[in-house]
Length: 239
Image 1 (spheres, rainbow, N blue to C red):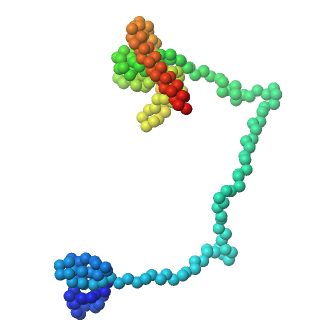
Image 2: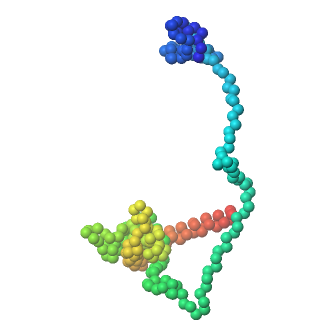
Image 3: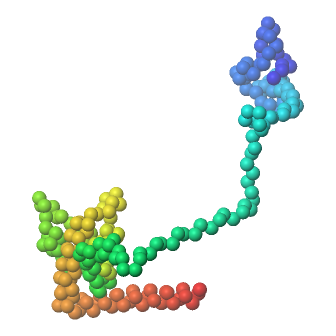
């Protein structure tokens, strides 16, 4: 910034340099590159600008030794990659027994118990019927036992297992997770399955002895099934 009235701002002995530090103590405004004092209306200075004229500069490509570096080009439509054909599995000669296949079939078969009343238990749990919790807690104490006054299985896990269509160790491990989304051990999953089977037997007996309760639950199950079937048909018609 150059000065127009430098003597009014700085002493006369001060070199003619930038006066912006002194203008910070005054109330000024800028009008068309002129700095004006708001109190007196006096022009204190003006801004000077210079056109930028960049000088051309040739940037040399990086050199690796004496030979220029060859930059790779990216093709828009590159050639297709060669197809990789999987290697065919080698078959055993005739008369040779695959021992690995036989070993995999050994041992006890996983126990899978169908649960035809899974829908009934879901409705009973949604309606907060007290008898389903009674059977679940009874199974946890009777089958799961306790250690130092604490049940070995969680009633919420057993209740979740009772609402599965098929009760098995694999289903329980895939559906129910421990804290931190950890997978439970096989022993714990088998224990939950045992408690769930015991609780289901008691709840089935309760529904047989109370046909009125079973009819009410069956009505809600049929209504839910018909609702889903109607929506499925409607979506298929729209498609």
